[in-house]
Length: 333
Image (cartoon, rainbow, N blue to C red):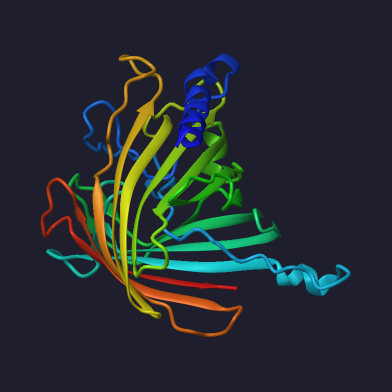
C-alpha cells in the first residue's frame, strides 16, 4: 500500500508544480465540465467529441511465452500481442433509441461506439511495452441535449498512447496488484491547438487473492496529470490538470465461460488556474456504477474473445433518463 501512496504522491507533485517549468497538465480521459459550478455550458468553437475520456477496454495481461532455444522471428511473434475493443454506449432507458446519456459530457448525446486498438510486446514476464489508439464514433443524427446543443454523426481519434504493463511491480501479501502506465503523444489538432504536451495515466488494480474462488473482490484506481505549454488554453474545458478516480470491482464466475460483475467509478479533478488554490478539487463528472455480464468463448490457446452487456446508472441520483444499456466486445491474441 505504501508503494501505491508513494506513486500517487509523485504524480500529484508533478501536476501541482508543473507550472515552474511551464508544463501544465492537459485534458485527461473523461470529457470535463467547466468549473466552478459543475454545469455544462457548451461553447460553439469547442469540439467536444475530441475531449479525452475514460478507458473502456480491459488491461491486456497477455502471458509471456518463453523463447524456445535461440531467438528468431518465431520467438518474436510468440510474444507479440494485440487487441481490438469495441464498446457501445447504448440507448438510455427513458428516451429515444438513438440517444444515450453520455457521462463524459454529461448530457444527452447520440448513441456512441468506442474503438480501441492495442499492440504490445512482452519483453519478459514482468514487462509489456506497446501503444494504443482510441476513437469515438457517434452513430446517430439530430440528438438535442439538455443545453439545446444539436449533435450528430462524427468520428474522432484521440492522441495515441505508449503504455507499459507491470503485473509484478508490487507484491502485497493477500493481494494481486496489477500496474499500468501510459503516456500520450499529442498528434491530434485539438492537442496541438491547445498546447498539450502529454498526459500520464497511472492505473492500479488491487484484487484480493482468494485462492481460486469463483468470487473476485477488488479496487481500481487511476491518477492522471496532464501537461500544457504556457500560456494555458483559452477555454476552461481544456484546462483540466489532474484527474483521479477510484472504484470497486465484485465479480462472480458462473461457469468457466460466463461471469457477472459490479463496478463503480468515483472521480475528482483540478483545473488551473483555480482561484481557490492548487489543492482545490471538484467532481465534475457523474459518479457511476455498472452491472455487467461477460461471455468468454473458448477459441484457441492464442486467440481470446470476450462479449458482454451492461447496465449503467448514476450512483447518487439514478433515473431512467440517465441510465443506459451498452455492449462490449474484445478480441485479442
